[in-house]
Figure 1 (cartoon, rainbow, N blue to C red):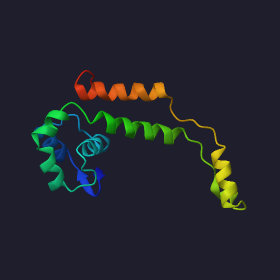
Figure 2: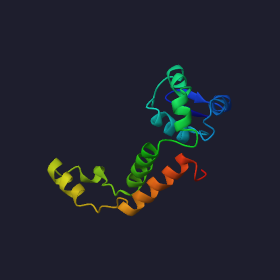
Figure 3: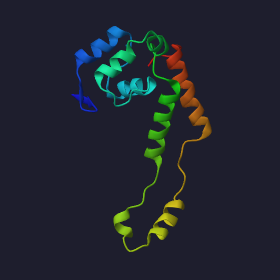
Figure 4: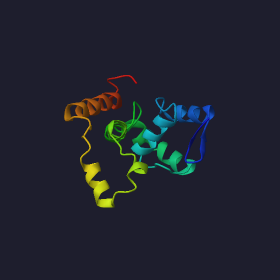
Length: 133
């Protein structure tokens, strides 16, 4: 079973979300994107539910999350997964400034502007209903 800020995400919970109109919210990840879209990340269920039942949010996010929030989340995840990291345990003999210099010299494996645009376009198409999950 998955949890979101200590709240169990049960099948019954997702059925309730689907009844409200958010059929695409099916797991922890998509629920997190939904909460980010309505600016209720980490909120308790009562607070989140009152926002989720707002017709404005139902209409805006019936097909998918906010393209901006989903894009930010995916780009950050990709950049973190591609980043090279230093093994700090092997660098204990260095000063803080030397460690920072080494970290600055690491190659930049961040996604390109074209990749970023493609990710945003994907989320925009999902949000607008022009692309399936």
